[in-house]
Image 1 (cartoon, rainbow, N blue to C red):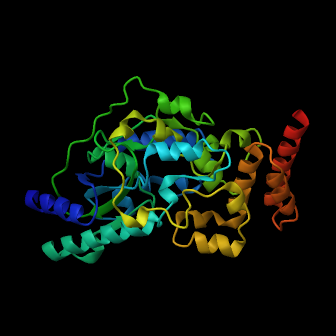
Image 2 (image 1 turned 60 degrees about the vertical axis):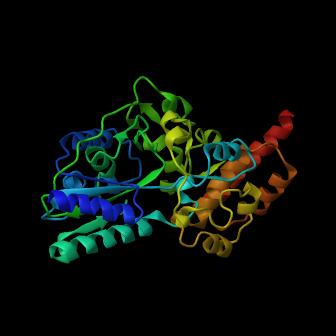
Length: 353
């Protein structure tokens, strides 16, 4: 089993994973933390976080026979932090979280993990149904598993941080029924730093290691299906899909390396688009330019909702006012509500001027 574990890590590297770790299925502390988070309703509308009961924290219930988890990470940072900050600081730019600029990572990670499973099956004669691959695609506590497998520790912002690679990476898991030797858990190295808590635009990190998703920009722009609370709209700035602020400020990300994975490189200039550009897209253009991307899952209505908020937050501009007026007759009541809000904000700025 020791030699097999070493071979699995080698195969993982060959498949494009930057790190591979192995752990068991015991997650009592993570289970308690999750339950506390749910009890505080920090999950908002993400009902799927509690829908599967203990399957999320007890892997053997999700996939019977599982005794080990192979946890993997794949780096995705597409550009230097300075470039990201430059666009984030330009209120006319449409800032999209950098994980979503390229191909949808769910499919890529699962495909690579399945190839790893195929190699293990060929080597050991295991049955295909004895292993199962996941990449943010099922009720799995992937961050807790990654920490336990030695890939990094869960930081105060709730992302996994690696001492040598920062936090710009995706996680994936392969549930397996072989009693492989396990790796040592990662130790925490956040110390007294609270940079992520202080930089969060909506103060969603309510305490170290505790995120109230209901305030998080990523939740508000991706997971939330209805109206964004008015008091939070001005805090969103020009972030139209997700948020990277807590990662951009993290000092450990000075060690992060740019991805060599071509599928994670920006498509359709999504890294440099302007708000007025993307607000003018038809539904057909939205679908075409987000094909194969994680962005498409929010649909065109939430896309326009998010951009309307960002346009309201932008400096006053006749072009923005005209663009908002052109969307006042949109079919969606939700879109119209956010367009009216943004238009009111823009016109109020003229009045103040």
